[in-house]
Amino acid sequence: MFRTQLFYLSSEQLCAYDCQRGVLSEGVCFPADAAGVAAFEAHLEGRAARPAYLLTDLIEEDFQRQSLPHVGGRAGRGLLQRRLGQLYRDTPYRKATIQGRDEEGRRDDQVLFCALTNPSLLQPWVEALARLKTPLAGIYSSSLLSAGLVSALALDHPHTLLVTYQSGGLRQSYFQDGRLRFSRLTAAIDRDGVAVDVAGETDKTRQFLTSTRMLERGEVLHAVILAPAAQVAGLQAQCQNNLETAFHFVHAERAAVKLGLEETPALADRLLLTLLARRRPPGHYGMGAQACYYQLWRARLGLYAGSALVLAYCLLWLIINLWGIGEASRAAATLRAEAQSYQGRYKAIMDSLPPQVEKTQNMKAAVLIEELLAQHAPGPQAMLGMLSAALERTPQINLLQLDWKVRLPERQEASAQPRAEHAPAPPISSLLIGLPKGAPQTLHVEAEVLLTQNDYRAALNSIHQLTQDLARQPRLTVELEQTPLDVRPTVKLSGKAATAAADSKAKFTLNLVWTP
Image (tube, rainbow, N blue to C red):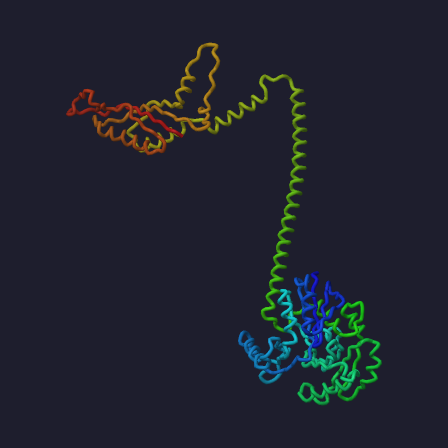
């Protein structure tokens, strides 16, 4: 939990407290003058970066409850702000709280307007905080905050007047059905140094509530006086119940136990400050430009929290990866041990076998080469498929003979020539098994074409169609080596074109070269 600062402001002084985990330190008080403000700034040196909460307990605080038409959304917020400006135009410290709606008629909203009517009491202290860029979280009213005491003490009277002794004096706050309606602060000691009559001040407050129609005539006002046990006996002697006022006394020790305080404070200041430190409600009065420092502090805190989360994620990721590396290392060690065990067993089995004609390594290599030959070795199937598809479209042509070969580079072909007896065998080219790439293949085709009544033009057209179909195949080269009719200019033509002849057949040859 972060250390925070709590300030309690009255008309005469400001008291500063350090708070950690809801526990307050001893307060340091500064008088409400120029010297006190200067001493307050010196006190803030070194702790200005801590968030601060300012609780006010001033006489110049006004409360008014009015009925306004029920309007929602932006229009309703604008209506509240305009009415606030009309009621309290000379102070920025003002607030409007909707406390419910009428049960009959138009069901108007019941709004409590409150404000600190003398802003000069706050401005020197707020400006001092702004000069040191202290993140001020909110400005609070002890009257509005005392609703938390009513809830903690379970005061469920319909008309409750909570009376507390505070640094500013005697605070009387009127609650109707648990909602604050009015509050007034009077001096606890009069000009003659005599304690103020609590019963008399309570009677004045009841008369004011009755005159303003907050409390109907005949209704009982329950005055709850919060004081230390040692003072209760004297207060009971002063306060006597009557038809319109009933006094109740709550020991400050009980309130301290409810809020978790180890020591019972003499004044209600520490009760309210403890309530503020532990609940941290939103600020009661606006702070204007001063709120920016608190927003910056929250943004910085968010960045720190985000960085911490990223760091935690990275550490978790690192731990998981280290654990994974350890698991992988242990698994690898287990696999190595198993491999060594299998190798030992294999060696023992091989040593127990009789001598073999060939080693198993050579047999394994032979099987591997056989698989490579089956997968990558060149074969005539591809070229025969191309030739067969072309012959399907030229039925006039019949095959006579095929000669398929694999074309190796010249140095490889030279090594493939017959060798002398007892000479060492040359190495076999890897191209014969299609590694690293397929070797070019050749196919010598001898075929015959049907001659119908010596119609060489039709025969040549059939051969031309065959060669064109073959040439369309990718990476296939077609060469017409011999045709049925030799039309070269160096060859003599002979024959009788006018003589009718029976159907016959003429031979021709093709050379096909395909590069896989």
